[in-house]
Length: 397
Image (cartoon, rainbow, N blue to C red; front, side, top):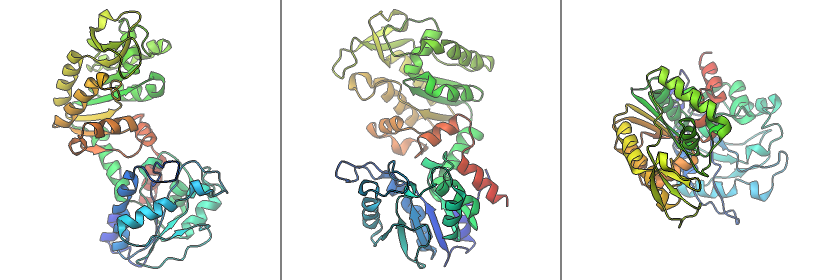
């Protein structure tokens, strides 16, 4: 994918003295008092901000936070806590500016944070008038928010369309490189792990991957539907019987290419969906009518681990069991540790996947951890993200 990168512009000496507008993803979780409870996204945005400042630019940064009403800035929607945390991390003042669309006063070497961009009228519908006003604020637009790359909004797409120069920041560029390495030019065999509660939410992902991967590991409620498709009993487990034919079609598509969808040989069941429920390992064919499947069994986990350790590339989205409950976490832990131990290039994304990576402390052993939930899923579906499309178009001139 040919795009212009902020680093390219810095290397060419085109940033000093320029007004740089960075669209970051600073949408962090907060408690009821407005205190930031987890600041990963803020920390991930620092390299781009520092790059622009070190290059001598006048730097403006904005982001969305929560789900504000357009045209109405409420205290709960303010980026004030983010400005305070940025100031701590950067060791410098970070002034917060409201009502910034019609003009921002910022000099080279200075940094300002622009209030919640989703408060601006026309943001979500990508208003051309708003996008042009934003573009007029800067000489260089930098998109560094992969979490919003699947949305064509004024601060993510429209401004890139009308700014004098539009480029990708280091975070977005790293996502593009990792996605290309994993999906566009993968080292084979390419194995994908797609897990979650419902086939319906990930059916298009499964169909898209079935055309490209060498192994497709399904987990969670999705695996239960695939077990039904294979004629296995699942008791009272979460599944979507109406989608059995689609599951069979995915299995057939994989088989036609000499690839496979491993169906669990054994599972871990319980009578209730509770953290302290008694866990029992059963052969997949012996699941009783009142059983709930809450994890894959040890034989299945070992088989999948061996497949992952022999992979060339791994794409991981979703835990394979109810890993929040320790009794039903062994399958996900085995998968996680196999991904970590594999010599394959691995890319992982999605909130639950990131939680599993954190729980087992394997973040240093995953090739790339994607920061985008919805954007990552749309890439797996084979969609071209609006942010990638406009940056490619601008780079082509």
